[in-house]
Image (cartoon, rainbow, N blue to C red; front, side):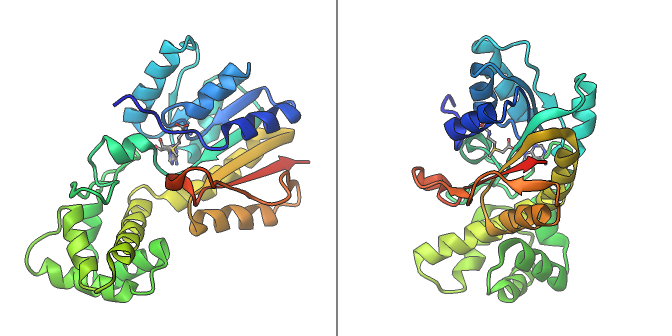
Length: 284
Ligand SMILES: C[S@@+](CC[C@H](N)C(=O)[O-])C[C@H]1O[C@@H](n2cnc3c(N)ncnc32)[C@H](O)[C@@H]1O
């Protein structure tokens, strides 16, 4: 698979970094290396990291082909960003980027249950250190625990009913594929479009739990805020309201950061990323 993930807001971010005289950047979510490459091509130094070894290999080979083999993609969770940066020989940095979630490669190539278009196995591990798969959660949790996980990770109004239907379905054997989840959503009796939306949100809830996405983002922001120098930037691209709210509330509480964009920029050009939101905070 040769098509790479499109790095969102890349030109806009490069311009912002240049305007704030940022030369050393942590790319906390290197993915397929799109943002990292844009920064390298603009003459910046980058410390790229990702928690998925499959993506690290892919990004590293792309950087090598583009003539940036000196830049090594580090393995790590951005919740432990300070360790990764220290080990790569840096102190304070000028900016940190979080482009959270999963990449096009996860969705299109890995066949691990990141896409709702095919009936793939319910794995959903992007964090290479995660032990339990989505199917472990789905087949093990109590109805109350399932409800809690679905309601907090999807914000679907029918979360209680979905939890109940999963428990009922488990009576016939474990759920193993995305198709099994779709059959459950079908029972809610919505239109095809609504069914896809609910399935996507339900899968999002399990993915968030499997990879501890919100916990890592919370800790990642703390680490990034300490890591950037005065005048430096913390940049976030989020894809749903849970992440966006977390970022907004975190910086609301920090009097040493102010928003560097008057309002968050939304992505309107790419249909797959229409929910993407860019926020930028400067340390003062
Ligand atoms: C939307 S993609 C980033 C795409 C990238 N900006 C590009 O241009 O190719 C998100 C990436 O972040 C990684 N990721 C998500 N949460 C992470 C975390 N807590 N620590 C490290 N990497 C993470 C995922 O594995 C995925 O590769």
